[in-house]
Length: 314
Image 1 (cartoon, one colour):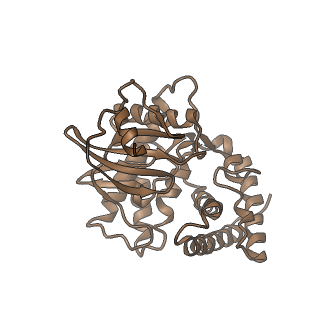
Image 2 (spheres, rainbow, N blue to C red; image 1 turned 60 degrees about the vertical axis):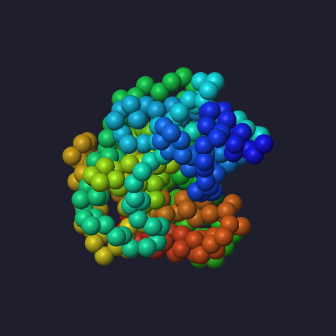
Image 3 (spheres, helix red, strand yellow; image 1 turned 135 degrees about the vertical axis):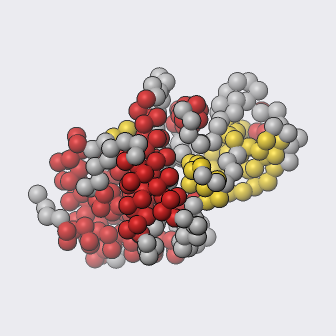
């Protein structure tokens, strides 16, 4: 039997029509049933442990119950949120309707971009509030975007300073930034807001559905600095002509719900930029990886240079 149909059978929807929609960290299929549409996700082997995958689903369920617009996990016929099919973990979550905030590299095409970014800021703040209020279950396990997870010997997304395509000058630049950033985090870590974060609210992971903002793809969510979420939401929009307005709107929306100290936002924008230089390394064989790698490296060079010029070493 086809592994997709075998997986669907575990949820009792093996006769439902489905189609392939994405295949990066997960192979994702849209499944159309009489009860509505769902996303079947066959997990990338080895990317997350069973505990991490189950924890993500428990987290999504809690955030759905808290009133956030996130994918709602569905239990299988055996009452499980996570199943295994031919060596791959599988889950079934509600399909999220809406339009992505934007494409990865294209210009934003929103009727009222500042309003959308203000709403996104509110939603990120609501997510952080809901995460603070949630008592996660025993065994809850997610990655940590702390100082070690960003800059340690084995960062969550890889040793960015060892990307084999970097020229010696860029490699040295990223190394200097790494040292300076560690000093900054060591000085300020206790003052920074830290807890569960989405960690990847990129344009394509944010859906606009009328006046609603919906969040997708919690694959990389875990424990981290709340500014990391803000920086991730802003990073790919820095080249927009109205970026200062969008940034101000996002921060204003966030502060309508909870306080935010953004004095280290430039640091976290740079931290987010360098993570992609590590992330791309094991994906160099994928279509378009060379272009993405060049873009990630150029952005990291620009932001690291700016950060090092504007700050002083301890």
